[in-house]
Figure 1: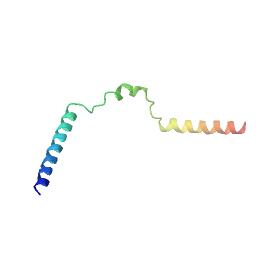
Figure 2: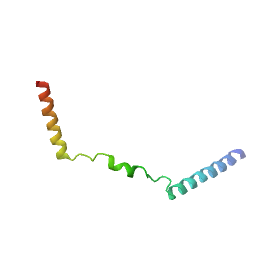
Figure 3: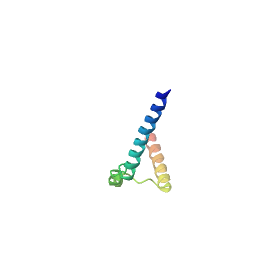
Figure 4: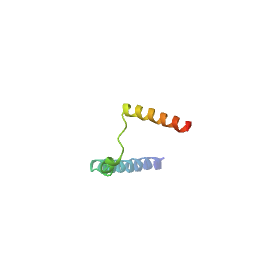
Length: 69
């Protein structure tokens, strides 16, 4: 029975060390994303609803013309 208490204490100590290491890493910026902001300009902008609707109607008319020919 005393072994269970020793294992519980060791488990709590190990968990505390990992919690401390995680908090330290977050505060020191280890999880900050420095790559994505530099390539964000390369991503396409989301299409607005007006542009999206006009693109859809153009695509449908082009498909109809290609099917007819």
